[in-house]
Image 1: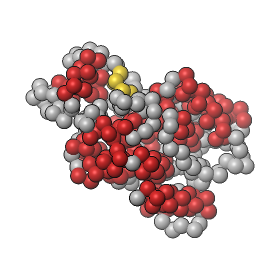
Image 2: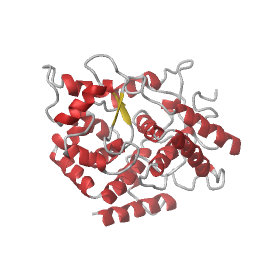
Image 3: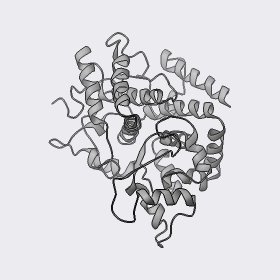
Amino acid sequence: MAKIRSFLVLISLACFLTLSICDDDENHYGGNTGNLFPSFYSRSCPKAEEIVRSVVAQAVARETRMAASLMRLHFHDCFVQGCDGSLLLDSSGSIVTEKSSNPNSRSARGFEVVDQIKAALENECPGIVSCADALTLAARDSSVLTGGPSWMVPLGRRDSTSASLSGSNNNIPAPNNTFNTILSRFNRQGLDVTDMVALSGSHTIGFSRCTSFRQRLYNQSGNGAPDTTLEQSYAANLRQRCPRSGGDQNLSELDINSAGRFDNSYFKNLIENMGLLNSDEVLFSSNEESRELVKEYAEDQEEFFEQFAESMIKMGNISPLTGSSGEIRKNCRKINS
């Protein structure tokens, strides 16, 4: 299975590089990706990837958690209007920032690192590299810097001149959503159950706030009882960090065994009923297809890494703005005009 996926990823990358030999790009990647390819900046800004990698490396060296934060920004950007950098916009004029949505308020972070990346890119090649591409590259580098897989990032996205607060509230899966709700939100973006399970594996790094998992500890079904799928000693440990009231911003590791290392222990935790969020544990407890995928990735880290890379490429190509659409922002927080 892993060898087959390796072959498919190589073929997919060949499609991006040649742009014309594959007829099923649109179906396989969930959108028109004909104008995106890894060498997009090879002449206009040849040091672009090196610059992004350098800034991200410095940020992760200062705080390992930043890798997870940057990957989350990319995910939350792509699920709203596509991967267009709309999440990076501050409120201004007619724009109401997505940063104030329920999934992002008081939790989305890493914007200052994106600012640093953009400033470095503008210094090297003004007006060339989009914020959307910078964020997509930063997500890939965050994986690599924490021990995860690498992949060639198709590039050429342009930046949106609008944001969607309602889209952010309605499209991004929530920690306490049911399996079917989460899957429907992935399907809406052209992503399937395999993508959902693989991409959820990014929770092998990073932390989550008490407010995102308190319900599981005290009132999972509205009857004042905890979630029965949560391992008891693990739940007791979580209650020490997350009381019934207060401490909303207290953090717990998404992966209790290796929150700073990108590996497959996240899936092993799910099998042991030690997934932190409800949206994590339902991958194992609520659906046979996703349960089998969890088992596969728990047994074979290489298979997980290869599928994660493929799914990240697929997610990164949700409704990109290309050609004359959008713009190349000089400042990721505001439109040029």
